Length: 552
Image (cartoon, rainbow, N blue to C red; front, side, top):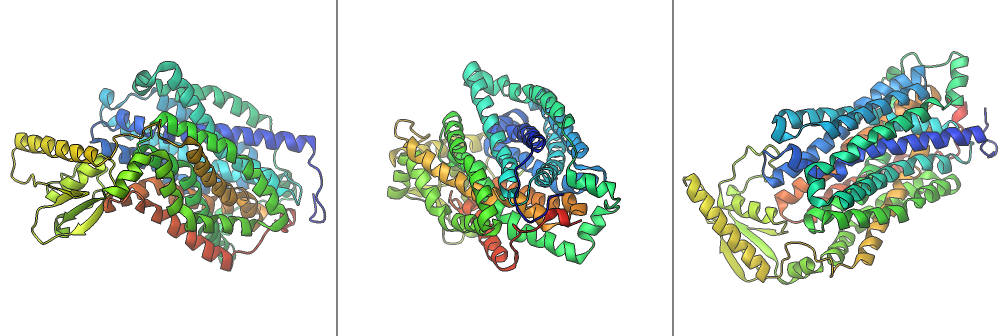
């Protein structure tokens, strides 16, 4: 096996299997992110029994379900990977992922089979999450164990590009299909084509996986009879390894995850939901930024071989924590200048008795908001209007103040269904009229959008992603011994990315729904990124000079 003395060039066989591994992983990420890219359409197809706002949040929860189960996939498939090998384990994961994605494409919607539709959809998302939980650890371990010492950051960075390339591929297929069919047909049935078409990618990916060789580090360990008989016990039942797993989670992957999802998914959701940019334009601009930013995964991965993994990852977390508020404010001004101007000139304020204001997160659609405060906030949330909260006298009727104009809300308690419908229509019409008079747009004006600046801002967010994500695979591999590497690195990675990262859109939008300020959702990634920076800086050791072949 290679020693830690000097870098050596990679052989043709090693290049082949690493390319094959990376390409297969691109297809798996493509499958996983189709759902996220089509969340708004899926909300209407599978959660149409709810109001529009709750349906979108519920669709995000279904998206998050795939992330929630990822650590369980990491444990299950990580154990198999450390016991029977890397190759066959992540051959199984791609089969599960591909078949689940195909079934989503042919699944009847809510209008056809009722509540069974969202239940089956969530079950399929969970299967995808389990598969992805076993995929990344296998791919990263496999590539790292094929890489020469001194080049692990550079070569594992190619695996890091696969998530972004998978997202990019999903956006391109969606845009292409939507352009060919038209927006109406795509929203009705055309959205299924990218899911169904993924079965061809599945066939290619399985063929690629079957042609690969097992990791040389695992082969050597297996030949010498040193494979772990109980990788779960060794990984999490012994404090010397468990403490590294915990530090890897809170000092590396948690911050990396929130920066990753803020820079790619939350930025996309923020543009379409808060800034009212049409989905096609938002997807194109995000895709361009991904295309520009993706090479930086390899740049920062290669740089980490020279200066270390830790300083690059920590710098990315720190920059995110310090710049997110001004960057997303600048994104508002560039993407929807009319909205930014209206917010500056005519701020919206909800004055209400705090005692009658409920938590606005209603994913099941079963909560009926009847107080004047709740009704006022729901109307503003439905119009994607950011507002500030001011406490009013106990028992007073809530008011919406738009600039200098105050609009009293109403309580629906005790009113008949017809009266509620009439009052609701009158109130919404009055609020919409005053918002329009105050300059609040119903959607972003493409003619006024500074697309160059939007792309520049989105590219900056992607570069932050590449800083934290480019070197992370090499660092996680180097933290753990070969015999339990697949299991040990997979769990902190997928708790960080599955829970801290995957729940970011849902959590951030819930914070926005509760507070009314469209920027307050950023507190979630900022706090976690800052915590990771502090903990990682103080307690995580640099790993770039570790000889992974000597660690069994």
